[in-house]
Length: 343
Image 1 (tube, rainbow, N blue to C red):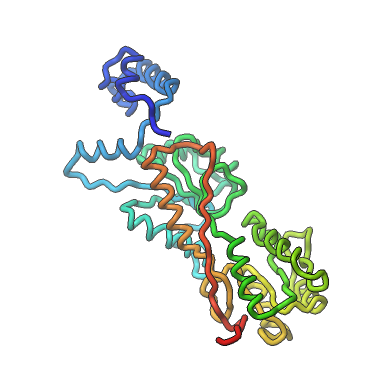
Image 2: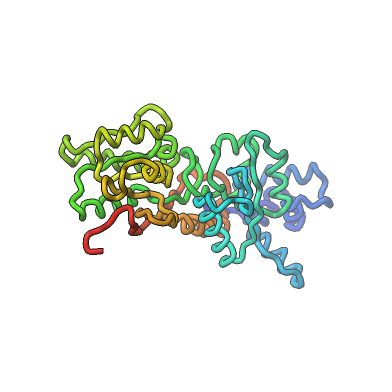
């Protein structure tokens, strides 16, 4: 929502000069504390919110010789800095790469903060505001409730890159419902009837159960004899032994996985891929030999930066009344684990 009041409106209400109001808004030391607090209180009552990007622009105009780059904060809840991520951390590497590319293209600087919610840094809001930062990208992991205990989100525009736990902020995510449908279309082209779903509950939970819910929807429309149950409905994960016993009991023709762990288990067993069963990775990230659906994680990062920039430009600061969720659709990537007719 745009400001309905200007500095002049506030000056008229307070009885001070417009220049005094402007200085109070910038916490200028030349304004007595009592006067500043009065002006800020009246401005808040009137619903006035300064636009941080306009303030930055005015600073740049006053200092024409200075080159200023707008900075956004990357709040990294993964407990590892983006520069220390290993190549095996494909999700984080690709997500950060997309964030970096879009920030560079938009002329934004990224200031990264590795946040340990168990040992949070004191005064985080003050540090960010002192550095002139008003836009936050939350880099997957942790919970918003815990972050809110150390950060005043009402002072910032914020976007979560990846799924959060029903966070009341804007999110950019991979569209796993669409990606499941992509996998089903490829499977149907091969006339496969028995499909197994081997995604651990812990990982499925991270996507708000969008994968398992779509799988159950698909099962409703197939004969009961072809329906294969989950490995477990109660535990957050399953073991190698449980996984292999489940395969031998239900003999799926194709197995849907999320990652490479189960694929590695199969290669170490006496089960042949793709002879005994085929494999599709629902979160394919350039793993050799595996067919799957690329969730376009780098594009999630790019879209998150684009959305944050839009919020800042429109002065949409604070927790939104109606949070947006932008979904990025993935696409099929062929591989040896799922041979296709005619290929």
